[in-house]
Length: 126
Image (cartoon, rainbow, N blue to C red):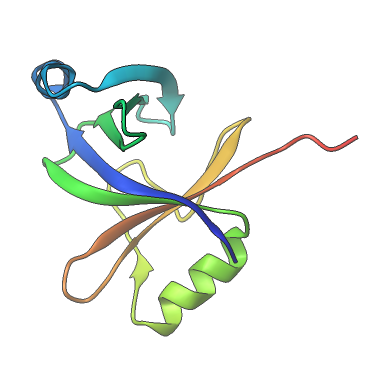
């Protein structure tokens, strides 16, 4: 398994002030993904001049900071985290795997409370 990116993801019910703060810190919106899961989660990917990333996700969950980890092999990542005590995080509207046309995600939590959103992008192959 290869980690292709690793950055903080802020989950909040009110994303606009968070986005504005990071814009003041020099981050710019890169893209927005709407309608993630049945709850209609929206995530904004931001990047600064040093190629640091932060994601801001609008969701009807308690506010928290999550680690986003993009990988090239979801199955291996889930196995590795499970071997270290992580379990699938279950919250209203989130199943074990969130599938969209461009990615799949598993939100996993450690016994100590670390939450990692494991994401694998789906690439079309000829």
